[in-house]
Amino acid sequence: MLPNDTIFHGDCGEVLKSFPDNSVDLIVTSPPYADSRKSTYGGIHPDDYVAWFLPRSAELLRVLKPTGTFILNIKEKALNGERHTYVLELILEMRRQGWLWTEEFVWHKKNAYPGKWSNRFRDSWERCLQFNKQRKFNMYQEAVMVPIGDWAKTRLAKLSETDKIRDTSKVGSGFGKNVSNWTGRDMVYPTNVLHLAPETGNRNHSATFPKALPEWFINLFTQEGDVVLDPFLGSGTTAIVAKRMKRHYNGIELNQNYYDLAQRELTHVERLLL
Amino acid sequence: MLPNDTIFHGDCGEVLKSFPDNSVDLIVTSPPYADSRKSTYGGIHPDDYVAWFLPRSAELLRVLKPTGTFILNIKEKALNGERHTYVLELILEMRRQGWLWTEEFVWHKKNAYPGKWSNRFRDSWERCLQFNKQRKFNMYQEAVMVPIGDWAKTRLAKLSETDKIRDTSKVGSGFGKNVSNWTGRDMVYPTNVLHLAPETGNRNHSATFPKALPEWFINLFTQEGDVVLDPFLGSGTTAIVAKRMKRHYNGIELNQNYYDLAQRELTHVERLLL
DNA sequence: GTTCCGCATGAATCGATAG
DNA sequence: ACTATCGATTCATGCGGAA
Image (cartoon, rainbow over all chains, first blue to last red; front, side):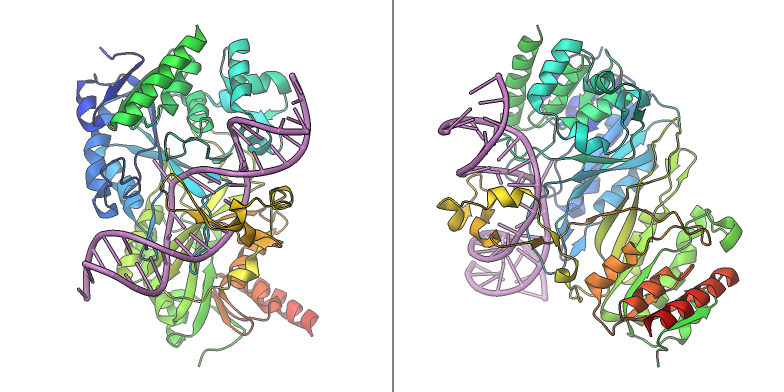
């Protein structure tokens, strides 16, 4: 049996072995980027990244339902003046593993990390790779429809966290539907480019994973009561968002501090929702 | 000798052989996309694309100056419900050929044409892959600076004491800043995400390659008098823009109709410039 | 309660210098 | 020669306290 609404402390490559086959509707995660969070994770060298990731993605392939989706938020770093190729190689290897590479969304980060270099500009986008087990999968496009016009800037990016909490408690059906309630029929489907600002104010976790990102994919690929898994949970963003949206969550986190933090946050959120 | 301001009729794989080594400052092109412009180009199947492209990129590597840059505007198509992997494979193979993969710019097409599919949204972005021969290349960043955001007006109006010195981040990210460095700035450097609307008006060429795209890269990677090459010239956009910007151009086009069209347009532009 | 304003923060990368 | 560490660079946001 798949445990519901649980987070685990450990390496997802190990923890996932206790999960049953075909039990998760959506995996959405942002794994540790190569060599970047050295102080908190082991710091995997770019050259070793694919070999490190593949056993874990094999487990993810096993636990995902045939109609489910895997969203992988990742970006290769620049090394010796070049973009490293490990993400490209990862896509090719995951296909050999049995995954279908359905789509690549662009997450455009408006307030990207500052800096100036002689040979490149600031990197203001990341990949959100969509993988599936089969060509037919669950997708609820109506749940992420947006007002005609500049959808992301005017709606998604501007909603503050308190706005979302208020809306959730009032309507209780997730934030995408609320938007459609307000604006009536002038709605269109979005594109594969997402405009979201990373949250820079989080003092507890160095990696910015804005709530709106998992929220958008949870709306798009799941319904209420479905199971969302984040095998690299970090400070718990995905689980918190899933819980608020009335989905079941499962999360795995290796780092003790993040695990504790996620536990605390989730307890807090669950109390709020009662 | 490299001919200046000339366009050639033929396959660039052949025509380029008459070009001398190390003679071009910037190559910017949008090659025929796999299998998409079948009626006009032969239609290379996605599975054959890499093998078709590599001999041509080998010639491009030869003719490019060591300080030069190659910008390849390309996007893989969706086939059987998946994104095809030929662009990823092409990047890996071009590196084996000797290219450095310096950067991947995202061209966000704001007015992407509408459409609805059961398993994906509209594709509103394309890759602009930057390749170089060596880690040191010519880049004129000042030429593409953009106006600073509105935030600066209020933020920089009054500086605190910490704003005037180098203030190191407390979280150990190693990032320090001196806010007073920004005062008096009107223009800032852009990021690696380009926001340009495709031009819809050109009925003569099936691929939309807006003038602003080659223009931006010509500004960034060349100075007046430099040589710009487009080995898949199409209706001549790159050559026309280069000419207007006082760069020398060379173009190659296989299709007779596009070749004639580009000739006519260029004659017209050159007359205007006199 | 609402708006305004000050301020810390961030999945970064390169080149130089040191071991 | 090859790796490790360190300093320099600089944009836009959301939060919290003040008005």
